[in-house]
Amino acid sequence: VRESWRLRRRARGYEALTRGMVAVAAGDADEARRQARRAEGLLNEPPLTLLLAAQSAQLSGDETAAARFFAAMADRPETEFLGVRGLLGQAAKRNDRSAALDLARRAWRLKPKSGWVAGTLFDLETKDGRWLDAQATLDAAIDGGAVDKAAGRRRRAALLVERARAAADVEDAARLAGEAHGLAPDSIAAALAYARALLARDKTRKAAGAIERTYVLSPHP
Image: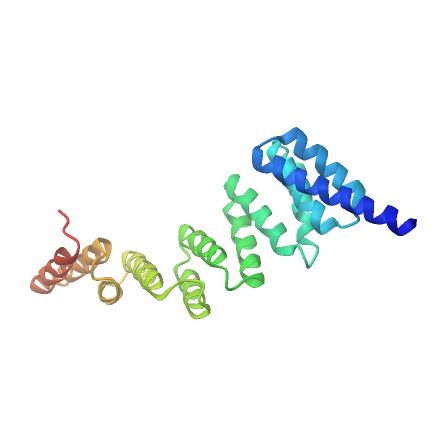
C-alpha cells in the first residue's frame, strides 16, 4: 500500500512538473508558479523542481527569488551548470560585467566543449579589452572543438586587429595587423588596420597592395 501511494504521489509530481514547464513555455506565470509549488511538495527531487521554480519566478518578474533558486542549483553538482547559466543570464541582464565574467569562467570550467559558453566568455573578455585572455579562450575552444576552425580564424583576426590598434609601437602594430590580414584577407577591418600601420612606416606600395587584395574579396568604399 505504501509503495502504491508513493508511486501515485510521484506520478502526480511529474505531472505537475510537466504542466509547469508547459506554463513557462506559454508565458503563464501564475500557473507555472502554482505547478512549481505542487511539484516541490510532491517530489523529493530538488534538481527537478528548482529549475521550474527559478523559471516561474523569472516569468513573474521576481529576479530575487529566481537568483535564490539558481544559487541553490549552482550548489548541487548535478545542477551546477544550469544554476551558473541562470545566474550568468541575470548578471548580463543587469549589465554586471564583472559578475558575468566570473560566472562565464565557472561555466567554462564545467563545460569546456560548449560552443555557447565559449562564445559568451569570449564576448565578455573582448568587451572588457582582455585581448590575451580572449585569445587563450579562443585557442582552447578551437582545440576542444567548441568553435570551428573557420570561425576561429576570423575571431583570431579580429583580436589581432584590436591588439594592433592598442599597440604603442608602430612595428608591433604592423606585425599584428599583418597577421590579422593574413588570417582573414577578406576582412575590411584587418585590411584598414594593416594599411594604416604600413602608411605610418611610409610603406605606401605595400599598403595599397593590402587594400587591393581585400577589395577583390570584399569590395567596399
